[in-house]
Length: 281
Image 1 (spheres, rainbow, N blue to C red):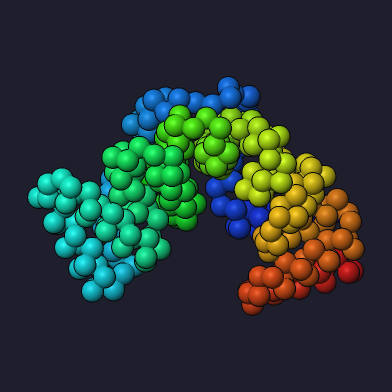
Image 2 (tube, helix red, strand yellow):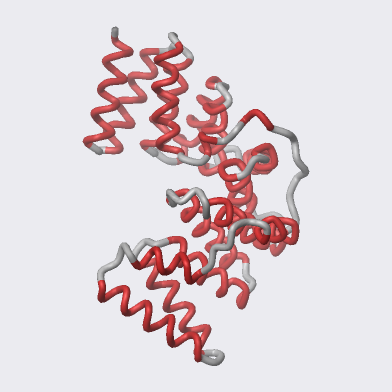
């Protein structure tokens, strides 16, 4: 397959994956099995300051005036509230941000809730929200701080339950997709699939790393594992990407067609049709 064609395919994967596929693979090095939350917290403290106030102010710009005023009122109330009223208000504000799909401020409020509750589920939810926040933000200045927050949250969940595959997967994905030490994350994700061979999240991210590192044959295996559990359009697209780069045109076309059907997105369908036409030449 010619180089230009390969670059075009990888280019779309970069768009779809964001941080993961823009990692600098050059400096890969093996790390230890995990990382203590204290170490992650120390790294977070060295990054640009990102606060609940700053992310809340930014997020409110996407809301209508009524919703923005509701949240501002709750935020004002919490400043003078005592316990347990303050804890109740934290949950209300966190839920408000959840309802309007703004993960960054929700993550910061859920972090305060997790610090109070200190439960596995609370830290997992916080980690997931910080992960959504760093994956969706276009502000590259605050991304590292959000990644660091996700690392701390998942590590605290793992400290509470070292056997939690969800915590280990979240921690692994954060290392791979948001730090210059992706091999720490790969090690964790490989541990997850060793225990749970069909784990969707771990296989999906290992497959994406396989694409980034040019190991398309391994990517095929990973995405097939995902599809045995869930029919995700993204997984079909990435499987097609692997097949195309392996020169398996028939399989690539079939996988692209399936991803287009499942995604049902006009813009995505247009791109897929272009890819298929190129493969048929």
